[in-house]
Length: 541
Image 1 (cartoon, rainbow, N blue to C red):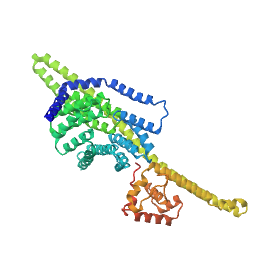
Image 2: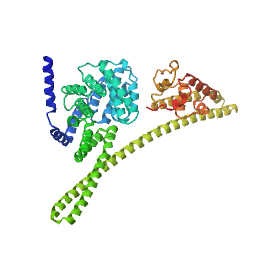
Image 3: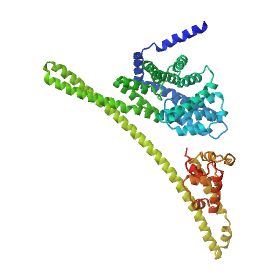
């Protein structure tokens, strides 16, 4: 009996959520969009109050860590670059320390920010630095959630390819791990259980779970926005477009109310409106989605909204062409039916005005797309330039260091000749020592090691992946800032220097020694034939 009353209560509460019609929800959404600047100012004021409250205090490392987390949480769905800045401070400070718990908490947060920007390779490497077995259950859930999210974003970018199913299966695997350890009354359990069973085909059960879970969430929070957006997705899979639209509206309203700029609901609403033929409204929400995606700074969201732009432009172009055809028809009718001349003239005028409006909107969209393309091209050029500078820096550094050592040797020979000629007896005894040359070589090795490992910070770890277990390299006492002779040879191979004589000249060794080292390294590798090619493929991050 108690269970019956409980279910009845849930139904009554659910009716309260859906009682508002979609028409009323559109009015609410439009009202919130009109208050965009005000809501943004309130968000900024809340963030500034956090900064000012700690501005004049000398913070301990623990307090600095907590402040960075608070600011990251505020910026996470608001501004990409600011969120990345504060969480990166924690990750940088904690990387390589013994405090793996707090490093993991920060690294997981950074992985989310990098995921929404489409930097999937960096996310994969960052999550690879975390050992989930060393985490408590709460952190494991966060870690598995991030792995699931990464695979979902990958699947979205890999639609219509063979990789799509693989990424979905990986997301399902991490959802299962969360379900096994999350408390059954928690948000993580409800959400992952619902998405898991929906992927298996039980959308009705998934909807029931999330609609019940939604009653515990507050509008304007990111969790509320995500759950309503997911419910919209479930209803779309069932083909119930009206309910899909309803929950997309709730999600968009929550995003606007909470100043959540990292969102997807406005774009999805624009798709529904476009399919229904409401092109003006579709343009309105798509333009707002583009503005918010630019404000947040996520390349992934910009790409998503950018995909719809050509469809909107095509619809407006079709509308303009249809308008032109109708205009010619009406003009022809005017020539033959003089009695309805006034009506035809009125319709022609209206159609002409619509044509102008459509042209203006197309021009605005073209300008927006042009600006986006310029921004993307600029980013690509910057990335190419950075890579070129890295290669140029390392090449010049090696050449300069080698030349300095070589000149030191030649200088020593010249001074020895002076000593043999008995011009400076005391100089001869000094220059017989190899201390000057050996010191120069040590400085060269130290500078080479630091420069190389700053650009390839994971080099030693990546090399170990290519070696058999018993032949892996161990870290020096100062971490990743020192290479052995074998690792220096591999580093030069990674930089494209493969000739034994060149390597011997740079490292001041004999060519026989270099050849011996390379042969031994190949013998210790897992894949001996492809070992050196694999070394050349190690990335900078």
